[in-house]
Amino acid sequence: MEEIREENAQEKEIEEESSEARPEEEEQKELTPDQEMARMQQEVEQANDMMLRLAAELDNYKKRVAKERESLIRYAAQDVLQEMVPVLDNFERAIESANKSKDFDSFLEGVKMIYKNMYDVMGRKGLARIDAVGETFDPNIHEAVMQVTSQEHPENVVVEELQKGYMLHDRVIRPSMVVVSKGKGEESNG
Image (tube, rainbow, N blue to C red; front, side):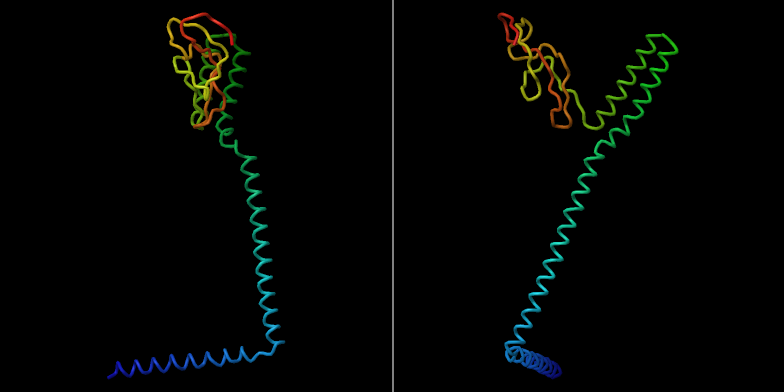
């Protein structure tokens, strides 16, 4: 019985709510043309205000992104340069040592250590040498400056590297300058 009473009470509440909503609808229908115009004008002003705010937000966003991008570009090398500063320090020490002592062997050993240090820093940042000698010529990573005949290498194989090539991750930043075999035949410059 109580359940039926609760359902009846809920139905009455729903009817009351719907009857309360009806007078508002009737009031809206009863608005004079001037009142309707004023209401619509207010809605237009609210929409216009919203549009202006969104446009300002978009403009601020564009400015912020441009500023961040400029900062990223300006300081992109910071990480690498921080790791290269100790390499510069080592070069300075090597120069000072060479001025004090004329021991070429120890100077050469120091320069080799600096070279290794520098190459390690660059390797950690994604730099890698391009393999060339003995590899099949690939115009995407090798730049052929000459072709030679070769008894030892088949056609289209790199026989000599004139300048090392490097990649940064998967992008060639300098192709290897190479001499390519044209197989057994006459030698020519290209």
